Image 1 (cartoon, rainbow, N blue to C red):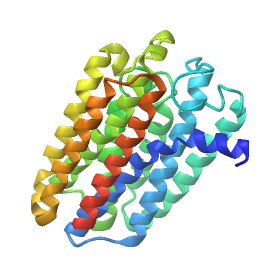
Image 2 (image 1 turned 180 degrees about the vertical axis):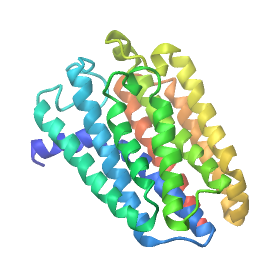
Image 3 (image 1 turned 90 degrees about the horizontal axis):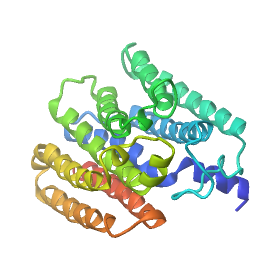
Length: 290
């Protein structure tokens, strides 16, 4: 593979993309469960979510480099801008081009919903950049996990369901959004657990830096358990094999949680990917059985 293409693919952070996909798929599951599934808005929401996350990943790489928070040879995936493989100007352009494409798709969703979606889209676009930049970057002040819970859980599940059903008045769906957000936050927790020492050295205050790795480890466990509890009413509504899925998820979740403590540095990166894949598998199982 061409080295330039490889560097851009690495910058997309493919291991994290299941996080954005899972929220939309979960909303599709709720739509199927409530007999209101619609293909077109669902596919558009999926494309929007993936592009928004890629834009966020690009922005994170550019603004962390610009702020001096990334250094050559860091743990985790290679950072193309920091290592000199991608110019900062190219990464900045790619960030806003990708975000622009996401916004264009977002505008098309107005065909299926009310004008207030413009405000929701603007809020998401600001969030993409505010995660890593601005006067108070969320990821630098212990708010990264909160941002993930909101932008990769509550919002995509709630809005995707709304665009299929025409309503946001469904408590079960919002609980499902929080559930997905907690699972998505666990992906970030593994990332920040791995990078805690490097982040501390450059003044980046993640939860793993503020409260320590032990706190992050326990939070990972609690998030997974809480996520399952929040969606139990939906699984019971599905019944049959659906009631076994939470048990399988919890078993695999606890295994991953236990392995986190025994690994350091780049050896934690596979667990980051496994956490994201487990989240996606959970969402797929929910939608398939709904």
